[in-house]
Image 1 (spheres, rainbow, N blue to C red):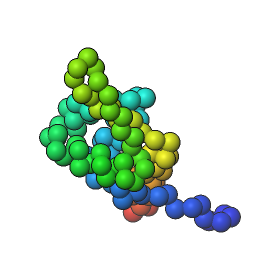
Image 2 (image 1 turned 180 degrees about the horizontal axis):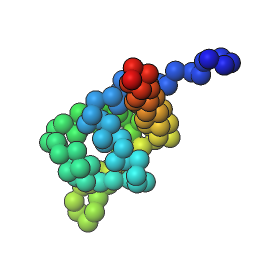
Image 3 (image 1 turned 60 degrees about the vertical axis):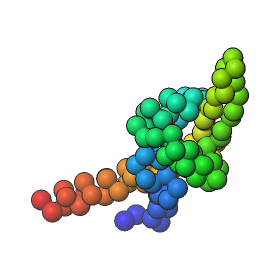
Amino acid sequence: MKGRPSARPVLHEEIHHPTRLGIMAFLSGCLEAEFGAVRDHAQVSDASISRIVSALQDAGYVKVRKGYVGKRPRTWLSLTPDGRTALTEHLAALQAIADSAHQAGADIR
C-alpha cells in the first residue's frame, strides 16, 4: 500500500439500526418532514417513532419542531447539520465495508 492508510470510516451506533438509518435517510431528502409522514415511511407505530426520534434528538442528529395547523397540533422533524454529517459518514463506512467484501471476493477468485 502506498502512503499512509486512510482513516477508517465511522459507523455511528446511534443510527446503525435499520429503522433509524431509514428515518435518517428519509429526512436527508427534505428540509423538514411531518411526524406522520416519517412514521408512515418507516412503517412503525407512533410510540416507536417517538422513541427513535428521542434517541436521535439526544444524539444531536434530529431537530423536533412543534406547532399547529389550524387547531391541530403537529410535529415536524429535520436533520441537524451534525445529523447530516453522521449520516454521510455512516453511509461511507457501509460503502467501504461493501467495497472491502467485494474486493475480498474478487481476490479469492
